[in-house]
Length: 434
Image (cartoon, rainbow, N blue to C red; front, side):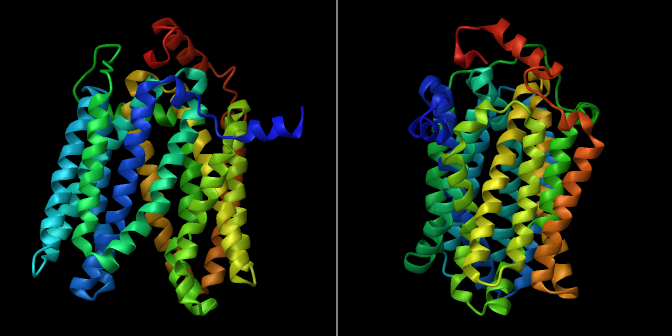
């Protein structure tokens, strides 16, 4: 194999975009959604601080969002296993657009109400938590089984574009146009994404369903715990985010350690840039079959890079290692998503997506508390490095404890084989039959 062929093999696999119309629609909708959401992500805390002058008030936004995130995340997963998922995407998208329009109208008032911002923030996280499990559960239906790794990488690419570009647009709009226009951009993105969801074809459930209930949610939790390979994906993600998530320390790092507050933006974008580069070179991921090992190695690499970032003597090297951490985290996320997509039965996908959303969301919240407390008791560098080391230890212990997770092979795993057979029996000729 020549070097040219090897380089081509590293390029992100765009087969799902070329072969599946509905995956293209879902991909574009997700990209537009994240782009608009990140514009508002910058605007909301800035507006609250501008109105109150209180850092505590800004932090309280997360507290207001916590309970709706848990409740509606779990309920949204159960709902996604019962109703038409595409229709749920459309209605929740319209609800989010309406709520964000309220933020825009409030921002254009002479005296915006901070109470309105908090109420709408709770509404938005509720509708978003209802929506996401359906989006996650629908994606495997739009591509062939063997394209799921590439599809997850492409989904990550769209999200990372939004994470990188959205805050920049938000900052420019706040500086030159006003906060209200940030929400106008988000409303536009939500309406475009909703129209794309509406253009997808229907994906009815393959078997009879039952209405969402506490018993159904508990059934999903029992299933997740009983599958040691799935349990490993959750625990590794929680270990990485709870123990090594460094974002809350970025302001102190640039101010106290390097005395360069003007470079704060580089820290926030470093991991995203690393993730984008890793996604662009993710063609090799489709040739990996031991996904459990790949998740463990990538998550341990994430922790190792975070630990090294805390030790680096220069700001440039800190940025480099945070970028490498972002690349490792993206790779871990691609393989976690592949395990979920390739092995979870259609009847359970919504509920398991709701559980996954909680592990993805709650870990960083706890990680911010851990990092902040450690930095106050010790030092900023100590908090970053100790978190990275603890992440490596936690991921390693998870792999040792869950041997089934470490030895997972997509070619022979009973759940992956069963799901592959179900999909082939459904319609082996049509990629979008899923």
